[in-house]
Amino acid sequence: MSKVLLVLVALAGCTSSPPSPGPGLADTTDKQLESAKVAAVALDESSVVPDPARSDPVGGSAEGPIKRPVAVLDSEVLATVLDDLPPTDHDAKLTTFARKAASYPQTVEDVLFRYEKERWTKLTDGQIKAFNEAAKQLVGRIKDAVVFEKFNSQTERIRILEVEADESGQPSDRGRDNRPVQAWPPGYSNDQRFAVVRLVVPWSIHHADVTYLLAYEDGKWTVCLRQTVHYF
Image (cartoon, rainbow, N blue to C red; front, side, top):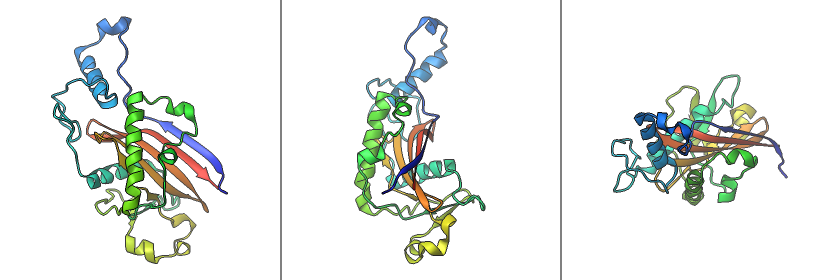
């Protein structure tokens, strides 16, 4: 039976909910107030504030969010998390990523497993709802045997293990430090502003599960939470 060895959780980047009015509100600039309105749209579906000036691809409008192809979103979020992930081959400072997605079953509970619950309390109710939507989509996509055909790394630090090489090679041929990182198909919230990415990362002769919660802000994906659970 596998045992949990170490868990690392990090929170960063995800815009918090707008502050409640307080004594200093009179000193708040119009620009700051406008920023608070944008945050309300992005993070809390119950506080929808019109934002006609917003022009990013998933910003939405009064008619509803503009949907983008899932394959495009996959490439964006994978690039984000692989850029954040430390190299798995420390000597060569490289990470090998398998183009073929992980296909063994997951549940929503697996995906959103809260090992250190207090870290997750920093998420707003709106974020939690959105990440649950994303986790459900991730679980539903596993049966589709996804291949990340459109993903191409923009950095030399990430090398791609193509499907043919993955299926023909033996793990022993690659060596302990050259096993690929594999991702389950990412999941997205209904408005495509939040994503869940889950990775299997080689660690010595063992492995780690890494879960990323991402938010789309200012035209790019930002890491809200990263949780790493090592097994041995």
